[in-house]
Length: 417
Image 1 (cartoon, rainbow, N blue to C red):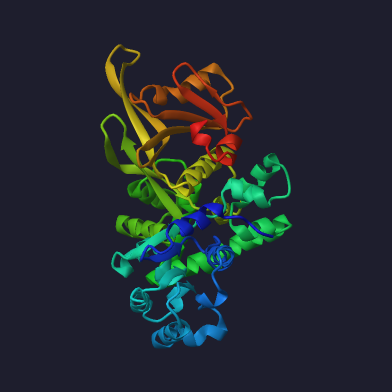
Image 2 (tube, one colour):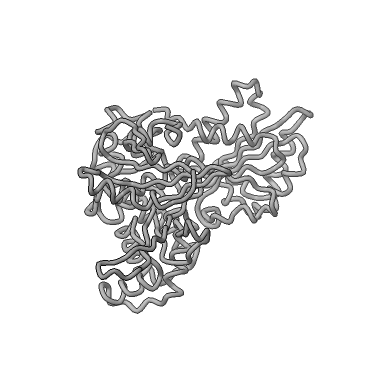
């Protein structure tokens, strides 16, 4: 089964010959290796590049164990470059290469070589990996399958596809599995035996149960405002644990570095400033989130919000949680300040969108409630409400667009509808 990753292929094409190391990062099993060694390699061949000018080394394979030695791999690569034509160096699981930072920096000195690497496990799961290459790394972050990519490989209609996607997520291998039992076992085992072990081993964590409890707390609170003190209170009241604030913050950082969770900071729209806490956390793959909770907390409203967040991130937007303050009188006539939340503010260059995730708006009262925060934003950027219901794309007299989750996820230019 061929799953198209056209966006990421274009990302690689746009970075060709830029004099930097193209570093493909992302959560494990998100399709990094397939992107580089299948999709991108096939593109190079179609462009007329000879296979002899594509140097591919999969460092996790036993037959390539000798190339984990820095001197051996440099000698192999240099001896493979026999003319002045352009060469493409593709290295997979580069963290298995000893002194890989020095090797990659050495490769940058080969004038007719374009370098692409992927990595996972250990330090290569870290988001700050680019700093290892002294400012000469260019990151392409690969997310699990978007709903559109998922539907490109799914054998069924979009409604059944959605029902499956919000349970099992977008890791490519899950799409190929035929039974629910396979998917449940795969996701549950993958989280425990791969992601969790990587984090524990990399960071030398001894109190592993506290880490697992923290993951479960975050998984149960997607879409809810939280912070370290609030999580600490949950540990004390629910789990009867005295975990420290510093440990909580450190463990969350480990999860972010491993791309398990991502944070959405709060932004005061009128004050034009970020608010420290509370904030929201979302899982990079909702299938993994559900697996952590043994598929027992499938709240479609929260999962839909997580999907929208991931979709915006995969399109290249930086995503914040919005806050609008409104002064109004209470029941006694006294003036007070209410804080109105906007689910997402998506920014990309000069573009900005305000987006509400509303599972349904069955009544006029609910509709007004969802629009209230958007109506109090005093700028001309587009405002969108995404609903689960199948509806036509509409725009009201205040310029607020309403569209279905299917239009939002499946239409490439959905933010401009």
